[in-house]
Length: 296
Ligand SMILES: NC(=O)c1ccc[n+]([C@@H]2O[C@H](COP(=O)([O-])OP(=O)(O)OC[C@H]3O[C@@H](n4cnc5c(N)ncnc54)[C@H](OP(=O)(O)O)[C@@H]3O)[C@@H](O)[C@H]2O)c1
Image (cartoon, rainbow, N blue to C red; front, side):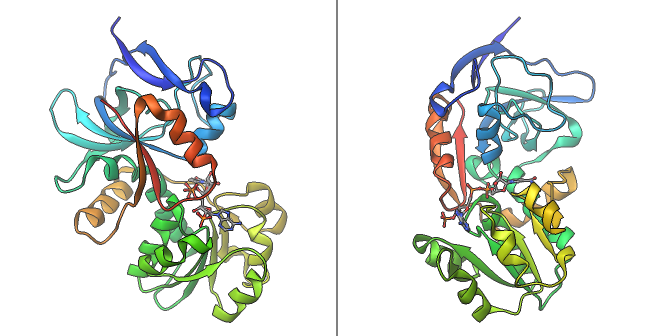
């Protein structure tokens, strides 16, 4: 058995439990690709996994638990640069995935951006589809500066949708740069938002009770979606949006990045050994775009 390095936890707990561990290097089965990982994106869901939550469909818990749902790397058999996604175990030197979960990486897209695109990008793309946005409509995005918010803001703007995005004071210029009309969240937010309406649709990419504000701004709850607050979405009769990840969606996003029409804003990159710092960064709950681990 060949071993490899990964970042994982021997027991669930705080960020400082995330350490380098030696685990068996995965062996590809029929129809699978073995990828040597160069970069792996970090998400709030990974923080939840580290703390003891497991995503639906995740393999049975076996410690050390290695989080991570997105990656970019080199296909071992062909030497081709690829971008892909899987459920868990991407904070590692190698991953195996079905061929249907990788696409070629365009040469001009750097490793960090490629490794951090797959999860937030596909979630944003799915949300845009589910909310049925059309050219000329106005979309409110709560948490527009985050990993998903950064993506949906740009994707909507390039489809001719007007985006109003909420963020902290520190991120107002960043949001304007993405093409959104920025609005500061916090005290007086509803009044500030009403000045920017009317809205056709809302994406809640922040949780924190933002759906309660949303239902005061858009009457049709089928056009209010959340990726962050399942319980409140259910209580208020709003849409719960889960990421529908597939190869076509990822290829389309990569083409946009390659053409310079979509930017993956990597706000911080950490070596695999500092995965605990990457988690601490995500746990601040603030930031512009994505955090990524550089492997090897
Ligand atoms: N359903 C799914 O399939 C799915 C997929 C991906 C992510 N998610 C969930 O979606 C959420 C966002 O993910 P992410 O990767 O974008 O997270 P992230 O990169 O950590 O971004 C979170 C953003 O929330 C903003 N924020 C903090 N407090 C806020 C408030 N009170 N009102 C509005 N915005 C606020 C922050 O903006 P400032 O920096 O300006 O404070 C930050 O940019 C997380 O809960 C994540 O678990 C769900």
